[in-house]
Image (cartoon, rainbow, N blue to C red; front, side, top):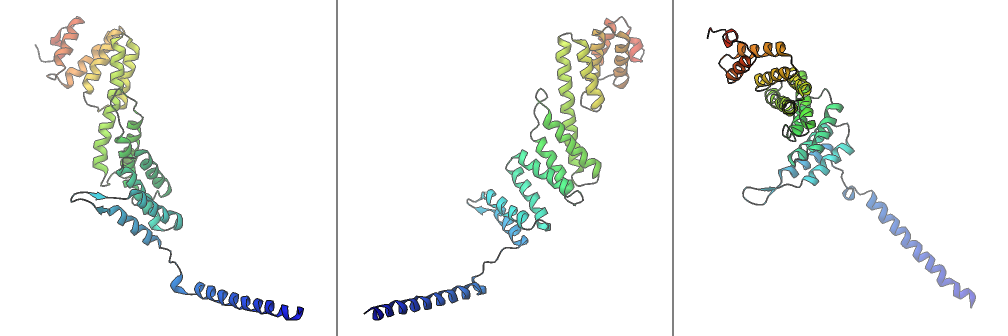
Length: 280
C-alpha cells in the first residue's frame, strides 16, 4: 500500500509547481506592461499642479478656497526631486509667497533670505529682497517698543537700493525706508525726552545726537535740534546750545519753532534782534 499512497502527493507537488510557474509569469507580464507603470510627474508638472492649487476653488461668488498646504507640498516636491531645475528655484519663491500671503512673516523671510543666498545672480533677487523687507516692515511696532523688525526692514531695503537702484521695487523701497528710519529716529527722540524730563541731561543729549547723526532727514528734525539745544543748556553748555538755536532760526526763521527758539534766547539774555537777522 505504501507505493500507492505516495503517488497522489507527488502529483500534488506537480500541481502546485504548475500554479507557481503561472503566477510568476503573470507577475512578469505585469512588471513589463507599460500600461501598469506609474508615471512620475516632471518638475514642470509638479510646479503647474502647485499653481493650480493656488488658483483655488470658488466656493462663493467672491471667495476662493485655496489649499495652501497642498500647494506647498507640490512645490516642495519640485525642490526635493528636481533640485537643479529652474522650476525648483521658482518653487522656493512660491513657498515664500504663500507664507507671506498667510502673514507667516518669519517663515516667509527665511525662504526669501535663502533664495538670495543660494541664487545671488538670479533676476528675482530684487523681488526677494523687497519681499524680505516687507516681512519685517509689516512687523514694525510703535516708537516706544522694540525696533528689531524696523532695523531688519531697513537693512533689506538698503540692500535692494544699493544693489538694484533701478529696480521696479526701488521707489516703494525708498518710501518704506524713509518711514522705517523715521520710526527709529523717533525711538531715540522719545528716549531722549524721557531722560530730559528726569534732568538726565547727558543721556538725553546723546540720544538726540544719535537721531540727528543716524537719521539726518527724519521728520521734525528741527525739533530734535531744539531738544538737543535744551539738553545742552541743562548741561550748562550754553554757547553750544546758542549755536544750535541760531541754526534753527537761520533754516526756518518763520517756522513753528521760531517763537520757542526766540523765547529761549531771551531767557539766556540774548536779544532776539541779533538772532533773526531781520532787524526786529
